[in-house]
Length: 421
Image (cartoon, rainbow, N blue to C red):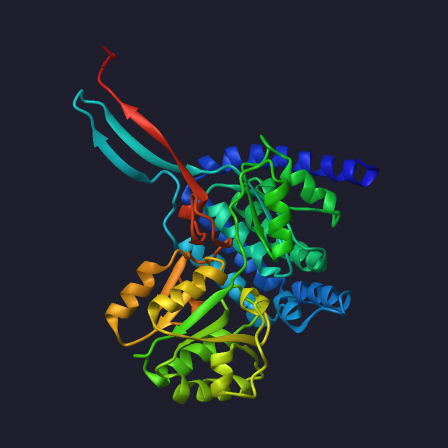
């Protein structure tokens, strides 16, 4: 390793060892202390809002060549700072997940066995662009008794540092260890590499960002990873859809915020209704600034639409672009999703309950919705207070990751003198 990588590794080791000590204290912390820390951090976010916004403006000014979608994810506003503060308060209102008895049973020999929720330990959070992730991740980790090391993207360093200061103020006010929430002090990529190699110091890595980041983490990590793949989400307009509902749901699913992972990237529409409804959907979206990539069957109805390549249907646009394909029923829609999707979030719009059931049961994606926008795939909207990411892997957790998903479990066995024969 070069000198910079060596220094990054030393910084990570020092942070991780401090985090392990803090995690041991946090795991035993009672709910009132954790909730006080969150409420005080929320108060600090509001009091320091102007400082946070100035830091964010400096981050934006230092990166003038960002795409509109990336710039939107990086940008903080007074409303977004307030949303962070409310998110912390909502997490404080949630039940404490630590120490819950998940199951209890008695064996024939009289042994009572209990499965009890406990924190994971030290979490390494690697994320890009969206500085509010720092507050969400810190809140969820704190409430679930985990210490966290946050490594934001180079482009958001100032914003994340300002948000971290508010979190530390909350910890200090509640008498909890400040090392429970730490932020990387360097933009050196070597720090990420050190996190990925920190087996025995970090218990779980959670990447939240683009395909390049997630691929690197999955390839290099020597620490367990809770994966967040691309958000290549689909909205399927079934032949029994209510047209007005379809228009409203699709418009929101695509254009509410194009840069979030729950934004719809592909419209699938049944051939039976496409001639009448597709031109209306296209007009709605075009009025909102959306562009399109369409297959041959869609272009036969709307010839002005640009041609979609094979790669377009496998692209997470994160922008005002929508791929469009005409399909022949539920089975055809599911085949398309299995071929091109990322197992994130899919929606069906229909009045036919049987079709909706067939669609939802046929998905392997983490989240399926019926008659609702894909942008509801969000921890706050699920009632989790916030989220640390959307898990699309098959192990441990799927969908929005909240408090319960940041816990593992242990067993307590209570006997009355039993010995094993």
